[in-house]
Image (cartoon, rainbow, N blue to C red; front, side):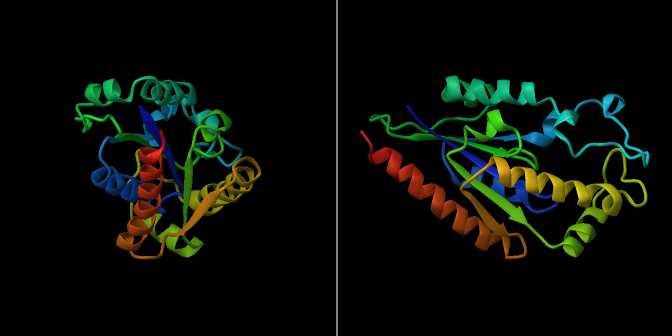
Length: 201
């Protein structure tokens, strides 16, 4: 059984979920684990000196639970797919490759997870575009006034710097490009990795 673990990282509203979903739809035997599914309860997320909830840190996430999910896939991808209601597509020669797509804004900042990735992609967009996209989305709880400029963007820059000190071989993606163009480039790269694995004995 051959496996490939792909990380789709990036800033808030950079297009991570859109790209991950499109890849999953185009790659057989794939599934997604999204970091946003592992936020701790709002009541235990700490507040900074400005009164802003500190969501953009690893401590706001159940990373232990996320790692359990990733390791469950690693131990038996076929069983994992079945549990998620997804069907695997295995050939008689059993040369198909299982692909796990891990998506999130801090996936490369968590060392135990970062070490598992075979391919790493990071979507980035400019400040003004990011702010505009963020303001058009509805969050629960909603962003308080000033949250993006005082907390979200500064934390992105801090996390970005930390990520670059931890992770290597990250393919940077321009989130302003058409989503079809981004998908085509990443899919082509992943498909090359899949075909290489299939050819290995």
